[in-house]
Image 1 (cartoon, helix red, strand yellow):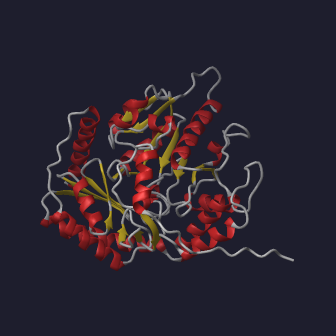
Image 2: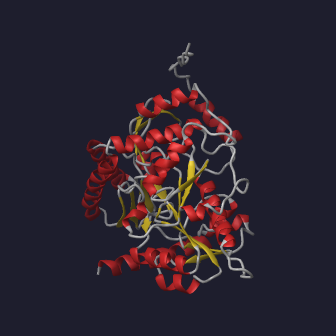
Length: 445
């Protein structure tokens, strides 16, 4: 007789906001500057604090909650699998890893998948794969390829390998010396790429659209030349799509706007609908460099998270969310363009799909804070760029509400001209931004 799945209680615990904040102040490591808000639940595109106030979420857990909150299909799968097996060792198969790998191979056009717990672990695995691949394929007596090229303004994660190819000095300097062999190429500068790419390079790593860096897309010319040089020198082209991939641009992957594929792509954030899951996806010949015992993970790709990820991808396809992303993006960008003449401190609108940025000539943090007070969650990166990463299933009415609340925040927030601080990393960012704006202006001409 089949064993019945036990029923679970939906009764919510009572929250004491003051106690939660006090405990956080006393015992959490101080790596975040958080507002004094405690969120206790979410539904659709909204979060609710302990007092019941609703907030329209246009940050999506930093691109994680791509189906919003409490999506019934995800909740159903998570409840089902939590009652079966939350974790199984990777020494054995589980029912969902293989099917999920098949679906990711289908979406990406690449053949093999390794599951991780996070995006930074996916990057670490991709870097190890690149070293292993180039060592395996080196000619007899040849000097090993060990250098990594990354782009200025990049952000790839917090572990030692990932932070070694992350450009802003503020992320790297406190932890130096880092993994040796990393060098940065000027963003979208083909000539600089050609100068730095030689037979010592084992991989070039780039975000198809830089997210944390302020929503800067890689150009077609730069991508194609990186592809050519990687092939010419026997190196690996790694696309970091942890933030911009898995549908966010209105394509399954952001690199699919180019004609050439990467050799490896890293994914994470939305993959399991809010549960921690990442992966690197590699072409067959590249994946073959990783043999049994050479790389592994305890938690990556467990049955619960893989089942949730399969359901996330199924919902994206069934509910035609790629089409919704494109339609809502058009509405968002049209609305932002209407706001631009009203606020002369809006310098530029960037991005595609539902990864958009508003570049300001003033500090962005006061606007994000004012938006939060008015029930809208957005984010400021690089001190003056507002970043919008809403769920894939937002509606036209959500876009209208967002634009209305953003307009009020832009109007009411205190205005303070953005002036880069006299620090190395801020001046470094300014130099990048000046060059990036020059490229945008040249493209417009």
